[in-house]
Every structure is written in structure tokens, then in C-alpha cells.
Image 1 (cartoon, rainbow, N blue to C red):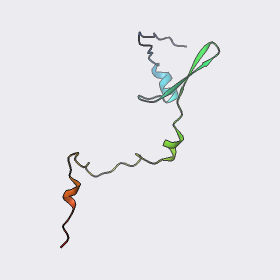
Image 2 (image 1 turned 180 degrees about the vertical axis):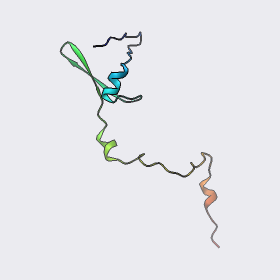
Image 3 (image 1 turned 120 degrees about the vertical axis):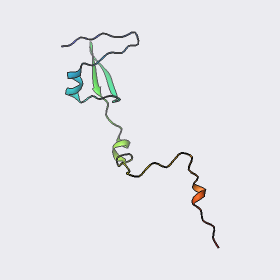
Image 4 (image 1 turned 90 degrees about the vertical axis):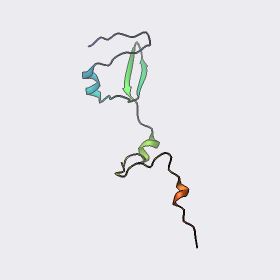
Length: 79
């Protein structure tokens, strides 16, 4: 059993060995559940919509298009 201190903002640091054991990483969502007289902390399940979607899984090797790129400049004038 390990002990940590609650900050004034209600934050705690999860010990490294606990994070590693459960695969918790920075930015990962977690859930809290009251179980009688203790609190259960678990990794949050990803939404099904995100799992069914492939959006963002493939990285392009091309350079990003500049934010100020004018799409109209690609239009050609018909004869």
C-alpha cells in the first residue's frame, strides 16, 4: 500500500509503479467509483464511436497545407 497527499485542488499523484501496472499514461481519462467505504479508480473505457472510426490512425508523410493557402488559386480558367 502506498500513501500520497491530496493537494488544495483535489489532485493526487498516482505512484509510478501503479501507473505502469495499469498502463496509465499522461492525458488518459480515468473513472472514479464509490465502492462502499473506498474509491475505485479505473482507466476510462474509450467510446465505441472512437473505436469504430479509423480517423487519425494513419499519419501522412506529406507536408501540411499552410493555414493561409488559397484553394481558389488551384482553379484553372476554361478556354
